[in-house]
Length: 346
Ligand code: SAM
Ligand code: SF4
Image 1 (cartoon, rainbow, N blue to C red):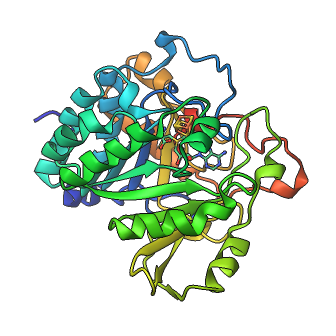
Image 2 (cartoon, rainbow, N blue to C red):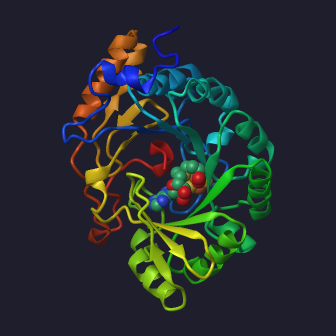
């Protein structure tokens, strides 16, 4: 057995507390951005002409596996691959296949991904075969022309075909929609009803000030508090106790029977329970989405660290996880954090 094969959660605990930060929070969830590239250019996420990273800066699939598996050995129970668009990374299915050993060993509860859905028609079946059970698909509108504009050229029909394929493969699909005042604001109830009608959870996300894009984000910002009030004028929203340790709060819509989430990253209402950290595709570990704090795990790996050295670097980084973040959209359209969501991983 290599040091990263199938460590049991008990083993992680037996070595002392797993990954516990300086504020006593246990880290059990890792999001990994496997690429900064994408086949879409969503207006709130990327600039129209993005400069992507040189290949040498991006972690190889083996490096991604090694770091992810080190986290699993330290008690991380949930792994989400994201990007950029994870399904455009060449060989990504090999990475899923390799990481799925942790599901089979019982070390990992969940292996999942966040995707724009354009390639799901091809990959949903193989992902389900590897033990992926639930996925998040980002979809902001059901209008082909608006979809094309928001994504700068994307084809809605491909995403819908991808969602069909995912459901046919038995995957539970959650739709993530960014709320954008002038674009999909009026369409939100329709999007929710559509999702719930197909048995999909729907989560709304407030825009976050991450990375430079051409548009003024304060123009697009739509408060979910406002959206919730609007929805409550014709639907009954019943609070659900579900707490994922993240910034989402959930309700049941009595009239549709479906589950609806609200992700409000700009309010400081979830930092105390935060159980997650993020690895960029260049191997930088961010222990807080809204802060610049970062540890360079690629440098540790490429300096030839052994497994113990890597684990030590991870522990040190997690120990310094900040208490909370500092987003304030009202200040300006300037990004609070310079990196793009596509680099950090949403
Ligand atoms: N490409 C995949 C996708 O779109 O699902 C995964 C990566 S994407 C960066 C992850 C999520 O971040 C998407 O749901 C996207 O809508 C969201 N996102 C990107 N930029 C954002 C921003 N500035 N504010 C809020 N959400 C954002
Ligand atoms: Fe690509 Fe996802 Fe960003 Fe859209 S939100 S540009 S699909 S990474």
